[in-house]
Image (tube, protein in one colour):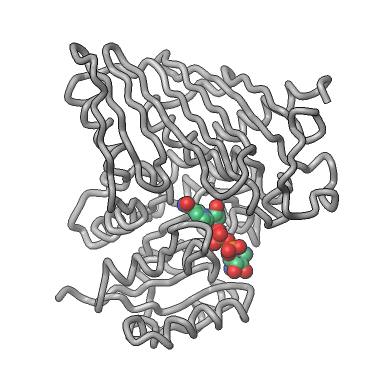
Length: 383
Ligand SMILES: NC(=O)c1ccc[n+]([C@@H]2O[C@H](COP(=O)([O-])OP(=O)(O)OC[C@H]3O[C@@H](n4cnc5c(N)ncnc54)[C@H](O)[C@@H]3O)[C@@H](O)[C@H]2O)c1
């Protein structure tokens, strides 16, 4: 067995400890990947009660007790650095707190920089989006991470899907040039009840917070985007097509100017000439989302359906009238992204195997803001 791996968990919330809303749960993945190697040395959360509950559930279970028995609770990185002995220095930190706490160099919103100075050499796994602050501040953080040679992975897990990698492989093997990408994300909103999610000043809005995964996938295939080329339109909350009948929270409590658009439709040019498009809609009732992502190239059409649950990939190739269909059961991109990150930390794989670097994730963040701004500018005069 290889040596123990010290892990610091930041955030006692849903991404790290699970949720009824989705399959994410980074600590369960770490337990599965590392088994007896995992030693969680600390859990940092400003909400002490939440952190206590999260730790108690791990200590209560026989299967996870050993990995968590040394875990200390902290409110801040500064508290952790004072308390953790040399032997408990973290080798990885999983940063699963809301984006307002990170991705900038503003004190209090600078978790990455705090971690780099407190624990040099500690690898960081950071959730998406990289921040909710200004994009130029994210670039300064990217520089600090690069100069400190910190290993960083960002949680754009869809890149690790087997279906996504199959598209990549076919594109590479056939030397295809991507002509366009088309992303469609239709959200089921009936049970989305967290008021802060419906306030774009707090969540970032549906493109920056949610469609970010599809913007990232678009960039993964289309490459860098010419940001000034982004055009977008929206249906706003106060327009007649934007009336929603199945809301289960009090939207009136949110200032009108902060409420979410119901539909955002955007197009852009990639640097190499291809065209990207995205439609994000808050429209469906119930709980099932409707998500599709397409890539076009000469002779080829790839259509990825339902990447968040059981992904299906439809491929049309030259010379074949029939669609090829691949269904990917048992594919867990959350597991693959963390397993890859740990392999890189352990030196078993090169850092280029991390599919979402910090710099790249900042570019996705820039694209999402460009879409949000373009849609807000074009809405003026209609609402
Ligand atoms: N990749 C995915 O599919 C996916 C899924 C869910 C969440 N996320 C991302 O994970 C991040 C966290 O989301 P969540 O759902 O876990 O949120 P959450 O609200 O459930 O939990 C966040 C926790 O962070 C704590 N916190 C806030 N500021 C802090 C600070 N400065 N220092 C320490 N702790 C702090 C809060 O007290 C809370 O317990 C978000 O960026 C979200 O977009 C990603």
